[in-house]
Image (cartoon, rainbow, N blue to C red; front, top):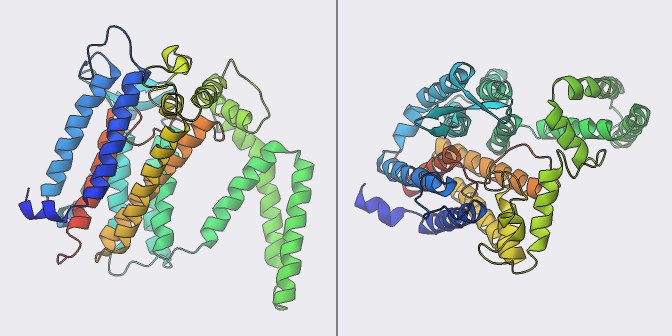
Length: 419
């Protein structure tokens, strides 16, 4: 590594990363602790495997800092297609865990290529959008970028891993930053709201709500601009009603039973404290039991009693809440917010469009993971199996997020260099 880069590195971001990593190791150790454990390097325990991947991740990070920044743009497409091939290979060689065929089993270690695909896709999107003639208002450019997003998304969906697939929506953050019309965001939010409203209320009431909203929009806009035509509103009404009528079919035939159950629990249509809703309920109990200061390290009754299944993975925040309390949970949330804000600020300082787009993509991925995972643990979002970056147990996740952060650190340290 060039010694001069050490002086240009953002050591504050590295400090935040290190604190989150340390917090993660401590909570994984606590969530999986048993009397047979010999320490944090015990490879028979989850924390030992996490430490192994931490060493691999840090080695990868140092290697990334040693590489010329131009390398990542030049080889972005190669990395992307390699990640696509690794996702395709899962249909033949993949291992199925909890209904999702998302892992390779290599020498006793599970590797999840969808995590690394997020890094590759972030670089690919940045590469496509940074081309001289790239313009999101151009249909050809937009379709290329949309195709690059949909390919891994569809492959992961067919592996029954909707949580990992959902994360690829984070790449719309840099797209909006680079000029994508906010009409797409309004459309996405409208479809999502309409989907859940249709699931929550009788179809007759939903049609009445759609009619009222579209009529009010037409009335307001017509008073602002007399040239407004009614036909687009009639078209919107017909499409909205048609979509609402299809929601039930989509929900029953596209979503798996476990996903339908989790959504129904969040919507309040089903109360199930012993079945599908057990994990979520126990997580909420654990977080509530922590109070202000928490019960202390290795003293969580919910954690020690194994009342929260998969606590060291999807529900690691419940360990934080129970043993470190509101203060510990708040500190963790503050660290994530500081990391994301810092990355966004540094992205705006970039002299290279490629680097700026990539860093915004990283911030988007971190935000989606953080928001959904904490929301799952608090019971305000359905459980869809998304890890909490740097804290949840999972070597592939730790490696992928470390690579993301260190590529950003490389870009930030070299942002004043010629491209």
